[in-house]
Length: 399
Ligand code: C5P
Image (cartoon, rainbow, N blue to C red):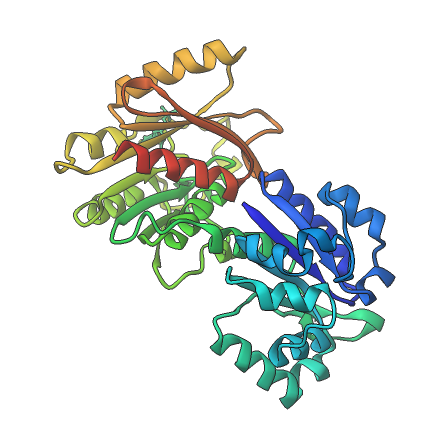
């Protein structure tokens, strides 16, 4: 997609370098349009190097290609980050005395702004009136956040983090191809109690599942997110009016919640890391060393939830499984994945290679996706949100 990132003159401009990098890494063609003032914070060579496109602030450069309107006309999305109080006022007034102004007037694409200023300037009635004007025109706003500001101040006015702006931008680019669908997604890792204070668990953070939920909601789906032990911080990525979170602890609780959601859902996604075994007996009291010796923990097998969902599925309901593998090489990865897809009977299988330092707990992921009959249906790497987009593309393709 063609994205224009407009940078206006605030100290947060340095964070926008990372935003441009995230967008280009996700495969977008990014043109940076800074204001003259923005270049006092981050110089032109940085923007050219990071976007791999020529950068100018003036309407008088590249006149033959009518650059002052062409950039806005050709954009699929315009992001203004940071958006200073002055640039917000300029947008509200429709001023066009530089390339930033003309680009914003010439575009019919969605516009996303990330305000950044001191708290007093943000609170000022003039800024609030300008924001209300932009909102009424359909401009999307991310942030500002509460936190440290330039010069040691703190308050509401800090630009949102690049990752958050990236997610908001990607959401605006998302197709609405899941409109009218209800989906249930399990995420996180189950905990099987041993005694009141201990459990058998795993390292899954729930980030990939939360990103899948956010992507589905952005594309128009109603989402039930069955969240196994996911921190509030991770869950904040899945805050959306169309996402209902159902918190669960153990595999048995997750199973009950998914079966409940399955009654309504068109698509079931089992992204959670479910414990294969649980302790046979859960002690009412904390196990102590006083008993002497090492207490054995006898295990019993848990239900394979995804297989149960497949067995009970309604006609037209699609079931998606995940597989975390630690294979020798890619050939082995695919062979094991195809066997697992057959064994579990899932329509789509998302396979990720994991290791001590890969997959779990990290912000990034890399997956291969198998569609119906084990056919390769895509692969993706990058942020868990970018991976989610590829997974939903494959699911939409398999329906
Ligand atoms: O066999 P494996 O655990 O690798 O399979 C992973 C897939 O199976 C995931 O989709 C996971 O959510 C699901 N699963 C399940 N019930 C279990 C174990 C795994 O539904 N008891």
